[in-house]
Image (tube, rainbow, N blue to C red; front, side):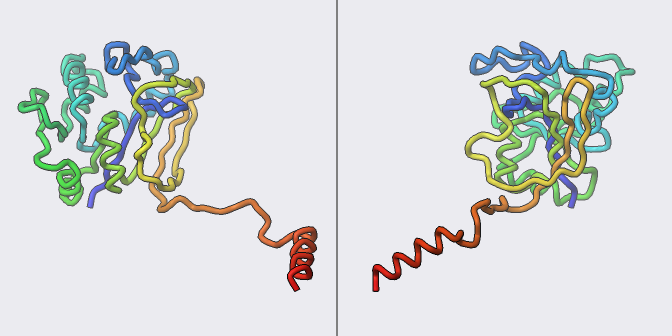
Length: 222
């Protein structure tokens, strides 16, 4: 079975909406489009694996697909990211799109969780979600995501579409790789690690005062 990897950029408060520019996704009156731009540096440019679709097939939500389709096919042929994304096989989750014009793109048929589960069961390259917040949340709830590639930017946005909304399925994650850019962007890779581990910092052994209180109660009850 091949892996499903979710890759996205988030603010410190978990917002992932419109990281690339003001016109990318202004829905809901979002006014901070392009919030990643001024944090970009050379280290990040060299670390695009996981965000460029190299050696993977893409799984995209409708909104992310439309943004990519309007941009990447028109970039210079020597742009390595454009070359990779344009060549990659793309699976698109949408209830409204009927035709796709970006090469190597096909619509996922039927219910999206079942369709992606079927893709994972096929032989081939690992699958890569880029952006596509609603799709990530749906597949996270179904426990289909095997790895999270998150770039966390040192900015608080306060509003906007979040990677994990209130209905997200609780679960632990394990950090397997991490790198920090000179601008403070933390590039991390996590894998699911089961249920949320619970515990308590409260003392497990009664204190002397508690023992005394219990003894007094016992004497009074006798």
